[in-house]
Amino acid sequence: MSSNCWFFKLVVSFILVGSYFILPKYGFTSFNSLHPQDILPHLLYPLSHANIWHLAANILCLWMLRCPLHIVATFVIAVLCSFLPCPLLPIYGESEAITMGFSGVLFAMVGISWGRIHRFKDMIVRNKWILVIPAFLPHINFLIHIYCLMAGYLYGRYAPRNT
Image (tube, rainbow, N blue to C red):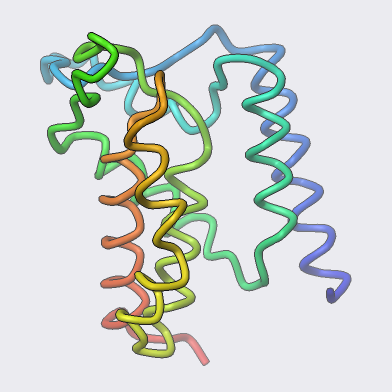
């Protein structure tokens, strides 16, 4: 891992940890209205985590990803995807739970890396378990993961490259 990538991941990790302890818990629900006061949860949900284990899992996944991470693009993708309908599966009787966490950004990062090499089928095959299993776990809004992965793939596939 290059020193720039290492430093970048360290900075993002500190931001996530700091946000966990400083910011109140922000998250969005699938049926938020679009009044100005309701936009803040959509902007801050990637920085909020339900508990310390949720935060640790997201940071661990961040450190497992290869650079470049496209943090600005993936953050924007995660925020925009939060405005799509994202109800939880009614398996556990939760259709209106709060969604929060950095995982949407992480899924967008994965999508971009696969989009850059134009390998959609391989992306789906290699990530099938992390796409399917969360659909059946309580308190996980797997639709935001799917949206972010697909939007990340499209961004990676079609966005102009700087290099």
